[in-house]
Image (cartoon, rainbow, N blue to C red; front, side, top):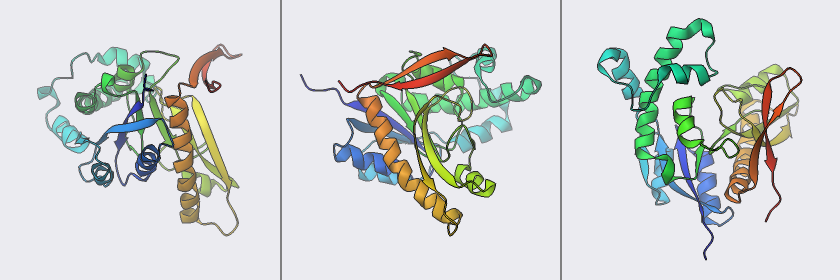
Length: 262
């Protein structure tokens, strides 16, 4: 019986350099996976060309156009099937309770975009979703479509900082501006917060006196290419398990255990 290959669906917003590294690793059989579809929120994303060159099907869920239509007349557009704004609001960790109306509006509009992604990339069509420079926060509406087993999340992200430090869109910039002597990248599973999901792996490098922001980004990107491949391969080999641990303050924290190779 042939070994099952992990089917990857990748989401991008721009150049897709991390996507290219994954495509190359799959082609070289360095990871037990295959990219079966690539989607973008931006029709001009160069990463779409990378995917097409590799023979991978692509799609666009144009977030800009969808959100523009929503802002123009939100009452004329119905939320997607199965969307329950109150349940999604209760699960999300992006907004405080003080911004309830803003959060409901944001989550509803974002669900319209995510429904367009799910239409082109249904949860049963891929085993793992990787965010490869996807510059959109995903909401519980999207996450819950894939994460049906708490021990085996199926959405993975790479972040340009050593989380939990410096979450957000400019990890290397924030690290450099703070004056850190070490920078790095983190691969984590996606949860309901922003860059708060359980950490799978990290790599770091020294920031030298002669480094500027551009050299820091260049060093970081090279590490990202290595790290993402390693973490995707662990998933493909079924070696990642998420467990919940109760903390002293009564809260729970999810951690990733790397299982031995079979």
